[in-house]
Image 1 (cartoon, rainbow, N blue to C red):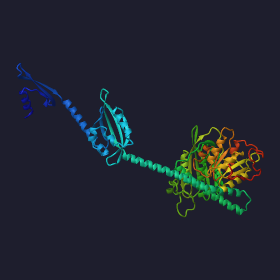
Image 2 (cartoon, one colour):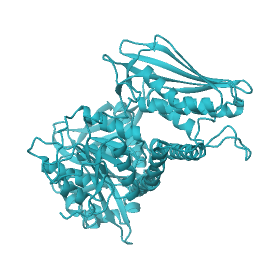
Image 3 (tube, one colour):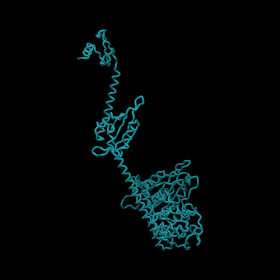
Image 4 (cartoon, rainbow, N blue to C red):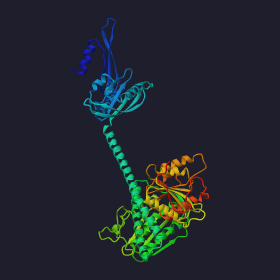
Length: 610
């Protein structure tokens, strides 16, 4: 039966045709969708004698419904194919109206049980997370936006991590009608993050272990080196035959080379770990550079080389920067130039290449007449452990760290370093450093004439706290040579005891000691001084040379820091700096506390009862 026969049969029976959809062609040949309603018209006896027909164009509505249907189908396909779980929940009472198939893959449970009971999924939540998840669920069905991360236990016992987010949806009138949300499996992501965290923790532990190892190695090497260098200096200051002096000077040069090697390794390690810091203090730039060249003059003289300098008059003298690291870079570059040059000269030129109101950029260029560097080697010379000559017959030794450290220090100071070299002619290493322009004259970099050190006025009583007998003897000899009166104790506990009975002008405190180390002893002394006007100057003596040691020593209450091995001028300078800031009392036999022998020999007070 076709459409017309169906309508005719209905109308003949006197029945209404309701909402019959059909298609019609308009005058302009367009096909439209029409909704027909045919109602019978009856006479007084109830017989259908005629019909009224209502036709309504529903083309637009049909197109809208079809579009909605397409969008619903697209949404369904998206929701059912994504890896995340999409869900819809209606409140009062809570009922899951939709849950995507991914739920079964992640939870390992059927969707049917969840559609029957909205809170069924909570039963799969890990016991430790369940109270928090219940709060999350109650928040969502009360119309609040919520987010949670928790674990679920699958039927096979495996655990999955879930990250869920839920959002409230309201009708046009603003009434809360449903919750929509998405839950994703973050197990793999958390596993990767945990592995990264574990790797980072392991790396940090390895870095700490390396730092501790370097600190211990530094201490173990520097402690005997302190005695070697110090005793050699003392011996060279005595009457010697020319042969004896030559032997001792050879020992001294070898010890200096070994110390330079140790410092390079420690510096490289600290730079690599990001622990090396650049200071910013006022200093005299010209004086600093001249002092550095003066220390290298004897090396050039030994090879009959000229060591010359040319300073641009535009370069200011008083600047702000790190004089220690600048000296380190200059010493490396000029020292290398001297080492690799057999005849001719080494020249240092200092010029200003940029100038602002409060900053100046200075370029330092070190030029030699050495063998030069092959072009294929030039790019790699600033890499660690790389040398221009890697052959087994190479003429010059070294670690290959010096230029790498110089490059990294230059970078840390805000500058850059580069090389120009021609084989057979020579090389020029240049670097720039930006300095602040100081408003007041900076501190000189040259070492003052420290020997003798006002021995007549300041014959100081100095407490030496040192557990190593050789270093104790060395420090005592150095002090006696300067006219001071040292008193020796071998540990912090004895130092604390004698410091309460005898007045000292200064303490030289070893950091690593048995029973009570230098840090603990200093803290204890400062605690005793609390509330009084007294302050006993304490200088840390440590064989550790890792960045941070100075900070820890000063934080413990020490006034200065001297790293082993140290020389007589270095020790004198520390004492001189402290003496400038302190007026020392005249000592006499009736001075407070136990008397100290009046001669210059040292007194050792080991294991003093406390």
